[in-house]
Image 1 (spheres, one colour):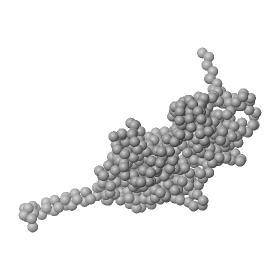
Image 2 (image 1 turned 135 degrees about the vertical axis):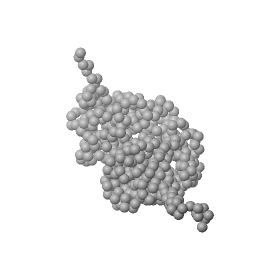
Image 3 (image 1 turned 90 degrees about the horizontal axis):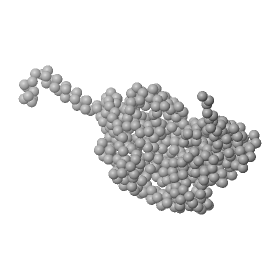
Length: 520
C-alpha cells in the first residue's frame, strides 16, 4: 500500500478515487471534431494572381489542407453543398469534369449536387456523380437516362475522433422551375422536408452523437417564392444540430435558427471556407457546443499545388482555348441598360438567336454585367456574356398568349431575369398593359396572328417561379415548345465568327407610356 494511502481515511481515499474515475470518464465522453464547408464554388480556378474580393478553389484548397493539418485529418469532415461543376470557363470547357476531379483530389467526405450541377444535362450529371463516387450524398434526387436510374444515399454515418456524425444530403427541390429541355429530361426531385420526415426515424435509431444536414438551399429572412425549405425544416426537425447551407450566395459565419439548430454557409465562388468546431458528449449523444467562423481566401494564400495530373491538365488546356479568337468587335459592347430598350448585349443575343432559329420574335435578357472593348472577341469574352448553359426553345404563340407573356415580363422589368422583346414593337401603358403590337416597319400585327417566338430554357422553365403565366401558357401549347437542341453560347459564337468587325446598337423595341400627372 502507498504510504500516503495509510494516512488517509478510507472514505476520503474512496472519494478521491471516485473523482479521478469520474474525471477520466468525462474526458472520454467529451470529444471535439471539426467540420469544413465549401459551397457554390462554381468551378473558380485562378492559377495566377488573385484580386481582392474574388475567390479561387486552388487557394481554398490550401486553407482546407491547413485546417485539416491543424485539427488532425482523422478529426475532420469536409463537405461541399453544391453548384460546384458549372460557373467558369474551365468548367464549361470540361463540362464539369475538372470540378469532379477536384472533389476527388481533395478527398471530400460529402458532396451534395446543386441545381447548376445539372446544367450540362442529366446524363452528364450522372457521369460527374459517378466520378465523385461514394462522397455523393443526395436523398431527394434521382436521374434517369436510357432506362437506367441512378440514386444516391440520403445519409451516411461517419466517425471522427470517436464521434458518430450522421450527415444527410439534399439538393434544391425547385429544379423544375430552372431546368427545361431534352437534355434535362429524366430528373426527379422531392421536397427535402418530405425526405426528412421519412428518413429521420432511421437516422435517430442509429444513435448518432450529432446530426448534420448538408443542403443546397439557403436560409433567408423572406422567401416569397418558397424556393428554400430551411425554416420549415428547422421548425419540424429540431433534432438536426447543424445545417450547412448554400445556393443563395449569402455567407453566414453561424447563427441559431429554429429552436436549436445552428446554421453556417460559406462564401460563394471559392471566397471563403466555413469552419465549425463541435464539442460532443458521446455518452449522452448530445452536441454541447458549436462554434463557427469563415476564413477568407486572400491574395497572399498560395494556390494548392497537389491537385493531381488530371486537374492540372484540364486547367492548362482550358487556359489555352480561353484566349482563342473567335471574331472582332468594331465598337465596344455593353451589358448595361434595359433589355429590349437600351441594352447592347441583349440586342446581340437576340440577333444571333433569331438568325439561327428563324424566330420572328425573341424574348431575352442580359446574362451578365460585362463590357467588351472594340477588338478581338475570344472564348473568355463569350463566356462572360453567356455564363450559363442555356438551351433555346421555339414556341408558336398567338397575339393573345404573347400579350399575356409580355405583360408578365413587364411586371418583372426590374428583375435580373427580365426578358425584353426583340423583333416586334411593343407598346405598353403606364400600368404595363400592352396597347399595341407592331412589326418593325410600323404595321400593326393583326389580332390572332401566330408568331414564331424564341426563348431560353431557364425562361421556359418558369424563371425560378417568376413567370407562372408563361409557364402555364407554354404547358398548354399543342404542339408543345420545340427544343432546338441549340445552346445560347454556341449560337453566339457562330454569329460572331461570321460577322467580322461587328457593331451593335441597341434598338428600342418596347415603348412605355408615362404615368399621367395627377391634378392638384
